Length: 73
Ligand SMILES: [Zn+2]
Image 1 (cartoon, rainbow, N blue to C red):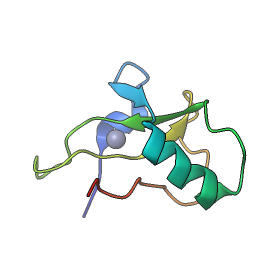
Image 2 (image 1 turned 135 degrees about the vertical axis):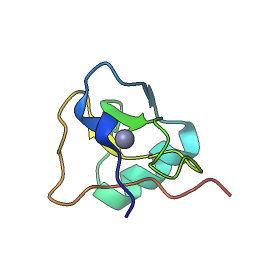
Image 3 (image 1 turned 180 degrees about the vertical axis):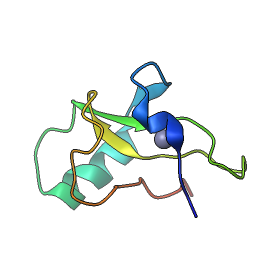
Image 4 (image 1 turned 90 degrees about the vertical axis):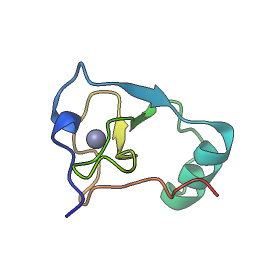
C-alpha cells in the first residue's frame, strides 16, 4: 500500500508546485489558483519514490480522498 506517515507531521518536508504540476492541479480541481498547495517530498514505505501527496498549507486532508500528483514524465 502506498502510505506516508510523514504527511501527518507539519514539520515534514513539502514544497510548492512546479509550473507543470500547478497546471495539472488547476485542471484537476478546476480552480484558477493553486498557490496554497504543497506536495509531500517524503519517501514512501518502500523508499522507491516520493509520496507526492497534495496538501493545502498544513491542512492534512483538504480532499475527500488523498490526492497525489502524477509522476513526472
Ligand atoms: Zn507524504
